[in-house]
Image 1: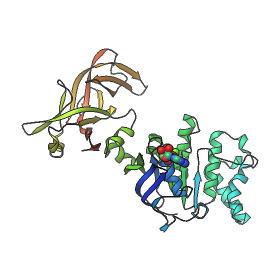
Image 2 (image 1 turned 135 degrees about the horizontal axis):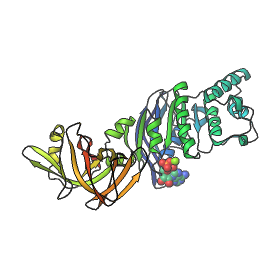
Image 3 (image 1 turned 135 degrees about the vertical axis):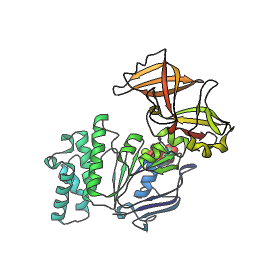
Image 4 (image 1 turned 60 degrees about the vertical axis):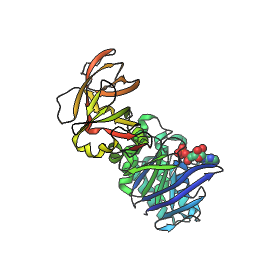
Length: 366
Ligand SMILES: Nc1ncnc2c1ncn2[C@@H]1O[C@H](COP(=O)(O)OP(=O)(O)O)[C@@H](O)[C@H]1O
Ligand SMILES: [Mg+2]
């Protein structure tokens, strides 16, 4: 097992800077997920770690050794792709053992490792089958088995679940997490799906346009995003952003979003936000779950307001309501029994304890 270190890593494709100088420290045994929109440089970063892509500048170290010039087969990594690329004419056992056979590993060692991996993945009954006799989820397991038997220093996954249907994806997500709990191999996992990232990762790395926006635990990213990009990317439905201004009166601050709608800023943020009073380009960020039906105020900084609801979307355990303020559509999450109805006014509650103040000019959360 090993830690992985990236230092000022750059990758150019002709003029396109796919990765623009990233630094990352991945601890031994850690499960790291790189997440971000399509084209942000996730696969390129992973392929550079694997040695499948040359780097233009910077360093990559695995287990404390710089591997910039080490060929992929000598990096002691195992990669699992979106298309599992199993050999169709070989059965599961042969598919899993093939890599070890090439390395002239003794037969009894191979046998022990294949059987142990099969047990971890619960595919012992499938060892004699050919890939075409397997379901998508089973093939995915075999592809993981092939990586596990090699007992590499690092696992690299590139969107391994994107070919599976939604239900299977959720199942396999849990499986991958269980496998990591058992084998504890350092893992770098790439996905564009923020839910997959949040549920799997010890720490999530949010990438945007070839750069790292923020690194943190799932809860850190969700509750204390550093940038507007992270705030908007993590969480579904996405965080609401409203143009706002900060006003000062009698030592207290208010955040104003329209002529008729403003809220007191929580007292514990007064000091932090005061330098931004009167500034242009401010945004108020509030997640949908912090706009609910009115209820007994259990904490300070919860404020009621009336709003005409435009669209109601029942989800079962909750109902999403959409309304607009100053031409911007906002989303709230209300109790299904709260009586939300389209084209009707509703008393809502905004929980300002969870507000974010963003400088829209720099994209930074203040
Ligand atoms: N082989 C290549 N040749 C030229 N451009 C590439 C190549 N591979 C990737 N790119 C470009 O590099 C950027 C990052 O791509 P990639 O790492 O595949 O993104 P992601 O995996 O995050 O979707 C994109 O702009 C993509 O078009
Ligand atoms: Mg990719």
